[in-house]
Length: 117
Image 1: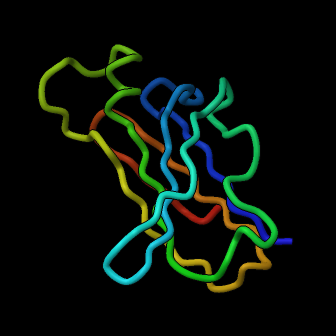
Image 2: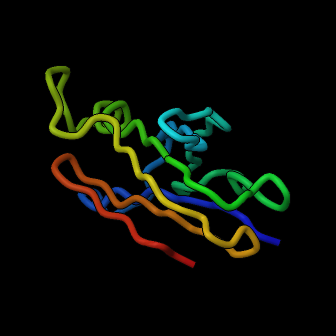
C-alpha cells in the first residue's frame, strides 16, 4: 500500500520544527486542488500519512510549507519581509504503490529536501 509522508527539521536550531502548517495539493494541468492541511507535531511530523492507499494516485503534487509563520513564532525572523516565507515543493508520484517521504530541512536563509524513506 502506497503512502505519502513528510517531516520538518529546523537545521538552525538542531531540532524538529513543531507547528508548521503544510498544505498538500494535487496538480492538474495549470491548476491545483487542495487535498489536506496539516500541522506538524512536537516531532516535526504529521500525526499520520498525508495520503495512503487508494487516496494516493500517480501524478504530480505540491507540498506548501508555511515556513515564515514558523520562523516568526520561533523567534528566528522579525515582522518584516522574510527571505523564506512559503516554500513549495513540487514532486511526482510515478508508482502509487510505493512510499514517498518528502522531508523539509529549514533555516531562516535556506532549505533542502530529498526523497526519504
